[in-house]
Image 1 (cartoon, one colour):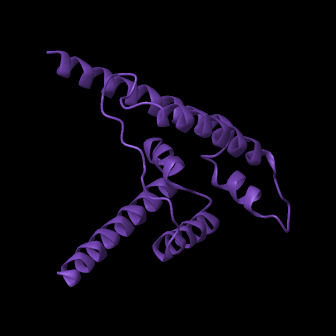
Image 2 (cartoon, helix red, strand yellow):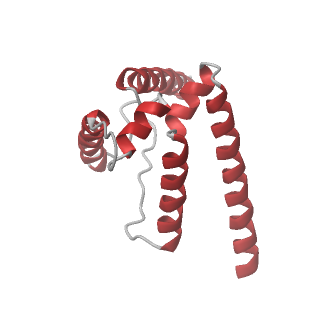
Length: 150
């Protein structure tokens, strides 16, 4: 019974976190592709306001990871799984480049894409569709790569 209650609390916490995250994206303007493209246009009419949003997110993330590194379980008592990789490789570099190109061309990244999708905006649907296609391609390449190693 306790395990089911923890799972319910975890689902509620995830839902609440997602709602707060989406609301934050909307309020900060991160769900507006035109505003994001204005931030990325450093040689033109640059809009630095999203830099403050990013600095706030990095600060909160750094604090959260500092606290999490000292714990074995979440505040809800579930197992805590932190990333273990500590080195950059070609896959990380190529993934970052592809992410940057997609973000620069569309002004949308995965979080805001889900916000746009949820609001019924077509750009969110197109971005999310291509994001899922990219995830499927990656999964296929990973499967091919693991079969090749055998």
